[in-house]
Length: 433
Image (cartoon, rainbow, N blue to C red):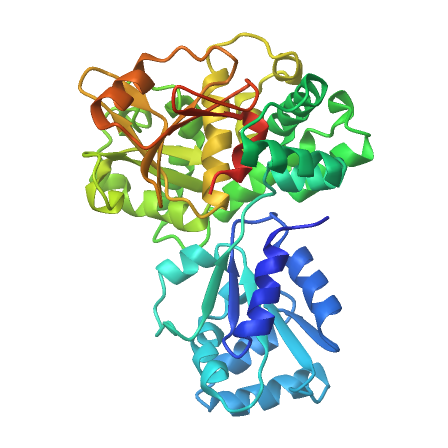
């Protein structure tokens, strides 16, 4: 399956290959697959080293010898003499060797033509809790996420359909009604299964029949995430807190207060008791944090309230699985209150995959804007609607108070531009940059 990160890998190869590349992302999002594809296609020779299967290599990098000696010993273990001019080396599960991560500095500064790429599960957590000297500035870091809706379309539809979305987005002219309805149906299918490659492959295998989709795939991924919560924790108590936060997110998204509430985990819970556990989850990229903006001023990062926030799951398919919602209710676009929260999570993960920081706004009178986009046009409000009911006092209140250059409404309505509001269909959210 095609992944958009492949273009970033090509840029690294062509512009900065002398700097080791580190791919960071949650488990089972397709990191190993796409890096394997890249290395096989783009280089004459390729060596794959999974540290999980090679504990002796982990031991070598623990030794108090020079990095060059370590590399030589590694070649002995691999029973090969690596041609550095022609070979790329992929260290998978690199989080298992903190010393190897530290030694990436040597590979960056060496005059020898090392070509190093690495990835691993919970790599973000490992870096956040690094005990050794992290090679700051000597490693290029690239974040990877589950397949977004465009990648889902690449896997399940024709390129012509994607081209038509691009054209209508650029011109803000309606797409034909037949295509609009078709794309909304594909979007609903995406809400059911999300963007985990294994799940996407299964829906392709069953010819996009949601009722033949293997639900156990997503359940197993969630279980693997819960199992991961045993790793890189200070103690068992922290592991329990991490899991409690994660499992509470589906219900937290429906909070009337529009903020994450620790009291929903434990009536006596306080933020200070969960600070490290929360950071663990954010570093793992299993969840995304969206901070309230205390003031609509630039740069928004300065005005973000770290204590008032929402959490979204990294993949909407994981959310629908945890909700145990019937796929039929999504596919038939049934009316239920939580439908808006599902759409909101979908947009949040879409924005994050486009490297957009998440912020939202709430007034004292309970007017609320789902997301605030900061781009060359300033601070742009983004309102998310799960249906074609676009009545919104909140957006009108925001426009009247802050007078943005324009606003964006994401809903099931077609493309358009009216009253200085860009109408973007839910299936085209991936085009917002």
